[in-house]
Image (cartoon, helix red, strand yellow):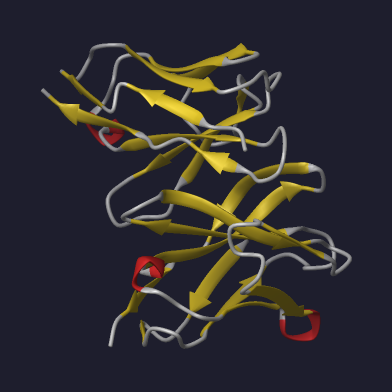
Length: 107
Length: 119
């Protein structure tokens, strides 16, 4: 199974800062990585597909990059509504797997 | 618009069988793969399996021996059944839609159903 390691586990930032969240795969997965945001007591929401492709309705401050084993979700100028947990998910091979998440919290 | 809604028992006793129904609207089950994902305190988000638009299924080997996914297209419903429940199966169970065939990421999710396994 492909293991996804997200770092850091928690990131404390001030609104207005820009941040980068990391997701590392245990083997090369091309660009088969997708990012989700999960707010407390809500379902995950798709933010980015295939490492860098945007999703309709998602603010442009969210962007993704990477290929192979290292991937990054970037948030340009974090807003108050962005404080939540972020997960990556790989679709390169079954079983589909998720990372353990990065919690973005207010400093 | 696209909607998914899970319904289930809430509380299940250990060793018993869990049955959850996902009722969808706004699209056809014969055009999309439907996925099941759970979120537990111990393992976080876990992919459980899916049913293809044609009706065949694929399961995570972690659950394969005790998991079954099926559907009733006339009722726009997808079903999850898992037997031999343990306390560590406690968590939130989601159905989700795969964006398009061959693209296994999830563009729509249900609100989830909380399942507690306890005697």
